[in-house]
Image 1 (tube, helix red, strand yellow):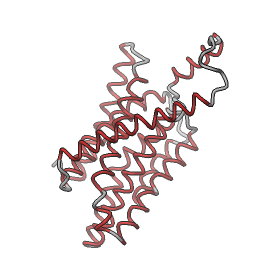
Image 2 (image 1 turned 30 degrees about the vertical axis):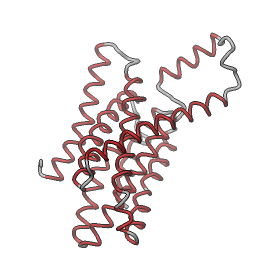
Image 3 (image 1 turned 120 degrees about the horizontal axis):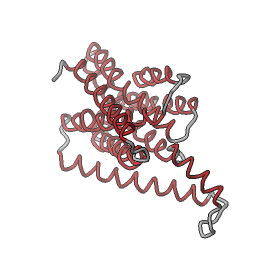
Length: 257
């Protein structure tokens, strides 16, 4: 239940008075990039994955999520009653521009984050199951470590879902449901650990690809809509805070190594 415990931390923000979601989107960018490059990819390499095969899976994952986002856009556009060939109504155009400025993207980045986070949580479940099978105390320590390093990611995912247009209640609910994938991964690994371990590399790679794609393709362009000096400095500060949170968590868990 490590993923569930981590997701519950995000509940503190459920009814919080958030002054600016966009600031926390910047935090999410930093946290997600840090999780990809300081957590997921190094973990996959330490588990014996060859760099070439791991990066090939990441490349495939980025292309997959690009195609997935295209499908979501296509489905969303075909659900619009107004044909794209018609001249846009200035009132509706201004309304759409206002929502675009607010950062809502029809739920695309939120959907991809949920998929990637579910894959990552399932892999963490495999790791926890393997640790408990080896030694009970090792399993407890591993579970506590995973809970700790999941907290920044779960909180950042929560704000990405808000940025993507989800209500606070739905964002928390979906984040909690995706964390249950850790339980599924742990149960599967407990009964079929050897087979489950064979899929750890591609699952981790796809999880990394989802976060990398969302951060670079969806969230960073949204931050560029505010380009004043004060906005830029605030964004850099929040990105640094996201990276620092993940880095500090690693330092506390691994003694700085």
